[in-house]
Image (cartoon, rainbow, N blue to C red):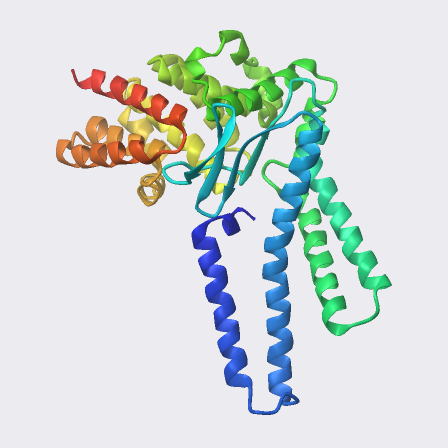
Length: 365
């Protein structure tokens, strides 16, 4: 769902549709009643409706969900459309290039402290249900037309299959709501984590936030409700990393790593969790056996494929410098890091990474 918001995703879509057009062109024999031509036409019609319908309905669902959340006091922090990022800065939305950072979602609405988690988490689900119903009703009520009815049926089916896939999502919102039910601490820490994240992206450094905002669960609470507590735990060890407290950061990152690797996570989260733990281990003792176990056969290659992301560039620099002891390669990675720092659209992320780089340099002094 997120891929269509990137330039690469759009280019792939356009290339695929162009291929369909070429098929249509070569199938045409001068007679539009040609059976082969009609079959290709119907196939291409379905493909075009599915892909462009997906594109439009994702935007529509996100826009309606954001509007509803706005009415309930949520605050728009960023909106990412292809390669452009609209992000809140000094109280206003600023247009930036979406480079050097990796965002989990195309749009982020920061919740107020007193919002219902069900409304905030499941708004897009309710909107998707409503769209499915609208498409189906229109398909029944409007005059029968192959093209119009076909479009509505394909869109309704697309939304329906999205809805039935929700229980299989790594961060199934209904599982989170179940874990938040009748647990005031879980609800408070969960909302806190998303408010900290939103404030951080919109211009407040985490080291300037009150310590009490980073209240943590016990290990037993975390193990029982990892979907709820993993966010605040990650933010807490991120702040500790900013402050150079890598022993404490490693303990929290390890807890997150041990629990979250047992869950069905998206590739984005799987690699992010492992990368965080790897960096903390490098900075606290540099246990080579543990580093090898965390890296496995794929982590370093994945990081290299994402070396245009600032946080991964910093990690690769630390890996080359402190683990491989390769100063030449490390210097190349540091040059990449400096370049990415200048292009990163979120100042607080740049500030944080620059602080952490200083802590890396302290290790070799």
